[in-house]
Image (cartoon, rainbow, N blue to C red):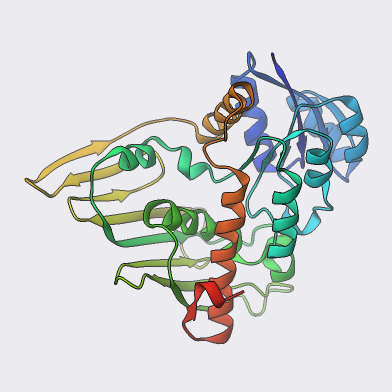
Length: 324
């Protein structure tokens, strides 16, 4: 069966999903797109296919099996909840919400459908290879997300995007959970150093977060929006009992086995994580199994990111369990 897919939103990420759908034409096809601006939605469907809508109700009436929700978190008005209640499967981009009450309501609504969250870093070849290796316990993880852009107007406002921690660094926060499990504590500092004179820019442009485990393990993440203009630099390193790895992205890493003897190798792949996550979700629907990254992971990672934001606001270390 070819899945009929609708996309909510018509920005750059929506286009990436539309491109992935085109590569999976035997499994799924784009039949509709929805957004509030009729002209923009029509331009999107003229380029990528499908029928344009400005109301989610009308798109659902058109008949879709899967909704890809790429709308900015501030602009969502329960569309994914409505779709799930109608029996439509979901792929929701991160963050799935800006608060836990909204996230939990989405999770509850999706109990009877296959629902995934767009943490596509987990789909990478190098990420999956590490998980398959016998590396022993990870003692330290470090991660970075560095850029320099004004982004969209809504991105610059904390009440609409949640800031860089929730909008960008959350991908690497999710990898902390994937690789090391749930941390016990969080301490963080953030600031807006160089954008105070930019109108309606009230999110952080530098941040540092330390997650801690009661057994002594640590993860340290930094992000900024004051680096080289036009360059997007992200990566992370893992230091475990029997291996280390330095990831330049989800597909590529310099891996070194450190015990019982030292042996280095480069992991390289050109796997498209957008294609991979849609193919996985299609298989989950077909085989009646959970997707690789179920939407509950979106709520769990959001909780950790919100705990880091609160720790920064209060300038103190918090127990994660007590943070929210």
